[in-house]
Structures are given as C-alpha cells and as structure tokens.
Image (cartoon, rainbow, N blue to C red; front, side, top):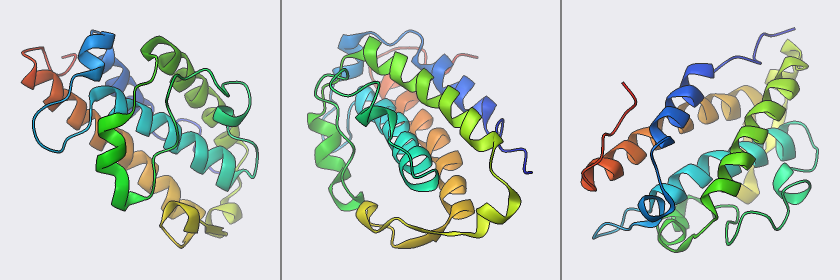
Length: 169
C-alpha cells in the first residue's frame, strides 16, 4: 500500500492558513484585468480535488453531488482550462459553506488515498471531460498536489493587492 493519505498536509495547512483572515468581501473582490477572485481560487482547489479524487479516481459520487449538493451558493465545477478565467470572475460561493466543504473534501481524500494500492497508481483515468484526456492516477494526483500550492500563491497575491498580509507566516 502507498502512503498517500498525508501526501500534501502542508500544502493544505498553508492554503487554510492563507485563507484564515479572508472575509466574504475579500473573497469576492475582483482586481482589474483577468484574475479570478480569492473565492474562485479556493473553490477551484476543493472542487477539482473532489471531482478528480472521488469522481474519477475512486469512481464514487463527489461530495459536491452528494452531501454538499446545493450548499455552496453559485459554486460549480470549474470548466476546462480554456474557460477558467471567465469562471473565476463570476463564481460567487458562500465562503463559510465553501470552507466546510473544503475541509470535508480534505478528510474524505485522506480516507480514500489511504486505501489506494501501488498498482492503482498506474491505472488509466479518463479525464477528457476536464480537458486533460487520458491520464494515469499518479499523474492526476501529482497535478492536484501542485494545484493547491499554485492557487495558494494566487490567493496570497490577491490578498496583497487588497493590502492584507499574504501568507500566515
């Protein structure tokens, strides 16, 4: 068995620490140009992880379609990479519900990943609906690990543009 359950604990701790002082007003603020809001960045991490790990990798119903269906405001799965910018400027989720959802996704992910065996990591996964074609499970997991870090940096930059402390350190 592979020890993936804690594959990125610091990434999510860093992301949650960066999000600590984010209010709904800060989360929905849009800078000039094309960047999406902090809320969109945060929603993207949780929704994408839920979809890829639970929906594609585990072939289960994602939490967004089950326990959290209809509870995230106007939050919806981000479209393929080509339309991310538009989505990131219009998404308006309830920040507290989104936080609860993100924490539930992290917890479910830990349980799911603890059960993955090494052979599973090389299985092909059809990520065509997400605009990524066929991938191995391990390539999707690597993308998710980097995704949390990337969007944490974007959230920090958007906080800085609003005059706020960017990272929790």
